[in-house]
Length: 72
Image 1: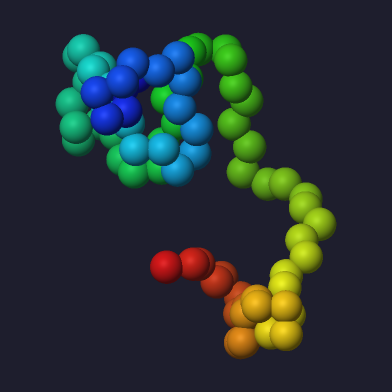
Image 2: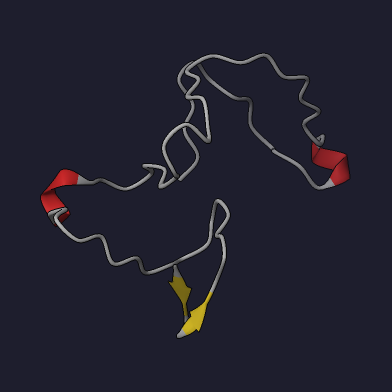
């Protein structure tokens, strides 16, 4: 794993990295996929969370969230 010509042991969500994957075509992967050693992570599609959203006065959102909201 490499970031800006520096070798890394790991990368985190939001990092822009380069990885050489032999035998894998660019068409086989897509943005947002996870690169991990087999058996090291468990995929999840649902989770519960407690979220605090800043009010307008606190410097947060001015408009409400709607169903299926996705940030730009």
